[in-house]
Amino acid sequence: MIDDYLNSRTTEINHNLRNYMTLLPDYIPERLKEAMEYSLFAGGKRLRPIFLLEFAKAFGENIERCIPLACAIEMIHTYSLVHDDLPAMDNDDYRRGKLTNHKVYGEDMAILAGDALLNYAFEIMINAGLSLSGQEQIHYLKAVNEITKAAGPSGMIAGQVADIANCNEDGRKETLDFINTYKTGSLLKASILAGPIAQGASQETIDELSQYSEKIGQAFQIVDDILDVIGDQQKIGKKIHSDEKNNKKTYVDLYGIEKSKEIVDGLIQEAFTHLRKCNVDNQNIVDLTNFVCKREY
Image (tube, rainbow, N blue to C red):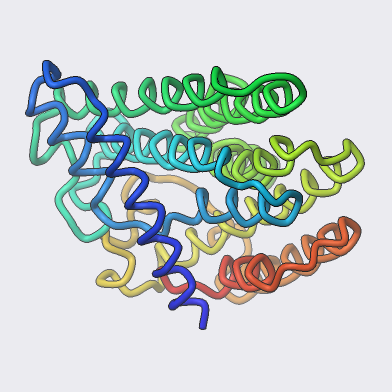
C-alpha cells in the first residue's frame, strides 16, 4: 500500500529533520526556532525527500550520504511555502490544515523563519560535503549544485515571478507550462536528479531522468490545479478555489477538469517511457509516479 510506504518513509525523514533541528546553537532565539519547526513539522507528503532517497537507492548502495540532501530539499520546499503564503504573495490563511506561519508568528517572523530554513538547508548540505573526498565529493557537490540552481533565480524563483505576473495575463498554455516547469517542477526535478548525481550516474541516465522529472513536475502541478477546484478541503489542508481568488489562470481554466486529467495521464505515461530507458527496477518509484497523478491531497 502506497499510504503505508509513505507513512514509513515520512517517519524516517521527520526523525532526521528533528535531529538537524537539535543541532542548532542554543543562542538562536527560541521564537525563531519555534517558527521554523512550526512549518517544517506541520505535516506534508515529504515527496521530495522520498523521491531523492528512492532514486539514490536505485543508483547506488550507500544512500546515507544523501540524507542531508533529502532533509535540505524539504527545508527549502518548506521555506518556499512559508513565503508563498504571505499576504504579499498568495495571502493564504491555512497550510496543511493549520494556520499559516505568518498568522501565528507574524509576517516579520515568517519571513525570517523561511530565510532561516533556506540557509540552514545549505549549511547542512555543505557540512556533509566537507566530510567526503575524491570522486564521492565531486559527485556530491554536483548534486548540491543541482538543488541550488533549482531553488534560485533560474529555477523556482523564476517560476514564482511568472506566477505573480500570471494574475494579470490571459493564461496562455506557454505561460502555464513555464510556471509549472519552474515554480513546481524545478525542486521536484532536483529531488529526482540529486540522488543519482550523488551516486555517480551516467550523463545519459541523468538526461533521461530529466525528461522523466519534467513530465512529473507538469503532472504534479496540474493535479494541484484540479484539486484546487474539486478537492476535499479537509484532505488538502487549505482552502480550495485559491487560484480563482487570486485571479490565477490554470490548466483547468484552459481545458476543463476532464481534459486536464487526460493530460496528466499522458504525462505520466511519457514519464514512464523515460524511466524504462534508465533500467530502473524499483516498485516504490513506480508507485510514487502513479501517486502523483492519482492523489487526493
